[in-house]
Image (cartoon, rainbow over all chains, first blue to last red; front, side, top):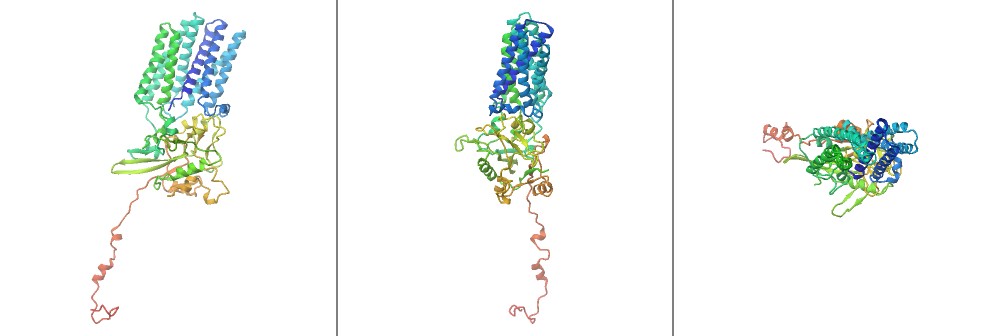
Amino acid sequence: MRPAWSVILLTTLIGAGQGLFLALTGIEVIGNSTRMFFVGGAIISLCLLGAGLIASFFHLGHPERAWRSAAKWRTSWLSREVIVLPAFMAAVFAWGAAHWLGWPTRALAAAGVALALALYVCTAMIYACLRFLQEWHSPLTVVNYLVLGCASGFTLAAAYAAWAAPALAPALALAALGWTLLGLATRGASLARNVRLKARSTLQSAIGVKHPRIAQKAQGAIAGSFNTREFFHGRTASALRSVKWIFVLTAFVLPATLLATGLPTPAFFVQFAGLMLERWFFFAQANHPQNLYYQAVS
Amino acid sequence: MTQLALVIDLNVCVGCQACVTSCKQWNTSGAAGYMSDDNPYGADPTGTFFNRVQTFEVGEFPNTETVHFPKSCLHCEEPPCVPVCPTGASYKRAEDGIVLVDYDKCIGCKYCSWACPYGAREIDEHQKVMKKCTLCVDRIYDQALPERERKPACVLACPTSARIFGDIHDPDSQAARAIREQGGYALMPEWGTQPANHYLPRRRTEIRLHPDELERHDNPLKVDGLLPRPSPKDPALDDVTSW
């Protein structure tokens, strides 16, 4: 698939925003901090979620019709995400406002946590539900969206705490380190799974001719088409491999080192850049079976 | 239940692209608006098509055969592109099984094209909506047309009658009979999409000659040679060739 920057930004930004909110509610339950710490955290989380939402509009051909996309929530995970994201933003806003006003926050926190988790599932299931995109069609996709979002969110929480509430920073950095290492394990598991994937569709099943040697001579267009642009990342296989190792370093290894050495702010920025590369690779690696029909221009 | 579909005979398709051009001509002139064409005469032409004819070479020289393969939306009976659409713009009609896009509801998110394993959907780069074969829904029911013309444009254009249009759920339709009797198959059956469009396989065309077709069993020339010679006195048939 061709990675779209709008979708990469959407998924990474809201993932971090959700993770930050989960970290803040965790502090609220286990430890405690000043009200303004939570208000500030809610504002940062809302900024990330809002930026993700704005980025998502750039993916649409007709953004002015985006309101229609809440219609088919019974069947479409995209529609569910479109409903859950604003609902989650409203919950974060209400939770932050409740802290600001000194109102009880536990019920709002619980609703926010449920919506944050639901949003991870919705975002991931958009990709995991497409059964012929075998690289995505796995429970690991859902696990990774959750774990990687939490990793960047907790790292951001640690960076925020280092600046706003230093007493909380070491504990949050430890939690962020845990999520980052867990992310390395789960993303590593999906990378290992995808290496061993065997494509279910072949050129034989695509055109229904049972012969081991089939070569495409023409694809019905003398130059490119939507099918050649949308479903291929346009980079070489070695570039793809390089991106894989770069994101393993920048999303997991480097931030884990920085977190362990007590530098959560650089850790967040390095990790966020790494997770954008991870998301780019996530899309680029998926090999759509329609590419079988578009192998040669002639 | 009706399921309209195309049955495409790969054995007679000659890859002339007449279905492609007639499809484009009909659908770019329709009420739904033009189908984009960029740089049609330039270095890098690109555009929106509902139907494309691809060519594959099967086998290795000298034992090769060329397969021309027309490809359009297969109007799946379990269309994976429909449930993923967040707006309901992509839908399958209950009355005739045609999968359509409502261009006024489509937000251009391209998710349905990701959900189609066949690459049958193409976004229109100018109108920013997803487009695909409609089975010429605007002409197959048009009472203003003579009945024999109420078929998709590609079917009417095909010079070799490689495209059969009909209801594949009606066992007596030409399309259903072709699938049943000529080994019609579906593309990528492994995904359970149950495409309505079917393809008829290429068949080996052989001339089977038996010896008695080259040399008649009762070869009259040889039999003539065995006949007794007529006597010179016998009357000949023409009174000239008597011995």
